[in-house]
Image (tube, rainbow, N blue to C red; front, side, top):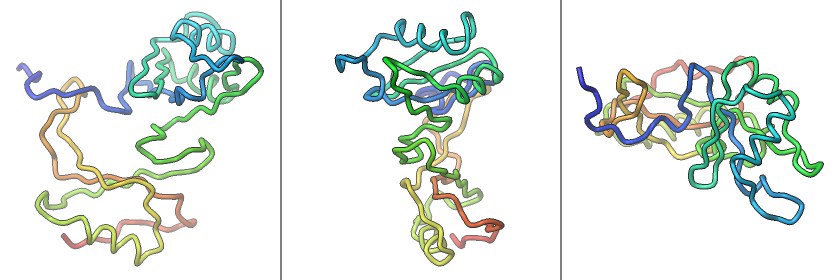
Length: 180
């Protein structure tokens, strides 16, 4: 079955070989003279940290670098050791900082997915639920999309809504129903 019809782009947090990318904002990747580095130069700095042959690829889309590594072990090592350029440690994000609406990698955000929500319904009940329960959204509410068997997003919505919130209090859950 050909499932390429309607494909827009890979998922913004898409995986390669089952390994989610690490994100770096382009304006954080500058040399001592303030110039952006090329993908090759960035790969050399990464290889200094985790060794050669562990990078699957690098991609810059709209000012955000995605670092794809060949294994979760390499990803864990890079996140724990970090990347330094001209003695400056770069902020690394394990979640897309623009989707989560965060400026600091240490800011903890939680992705909330609302399922079985009528596509025609207003998102106001979701926002009211958050306000009533002391939950602080940090991103707009977005629509989920159907994926192809290859994991690519299509233009077709699936009825799910998702957004990011600040870390909640211990033992706080969102399992209660939200009226649509």
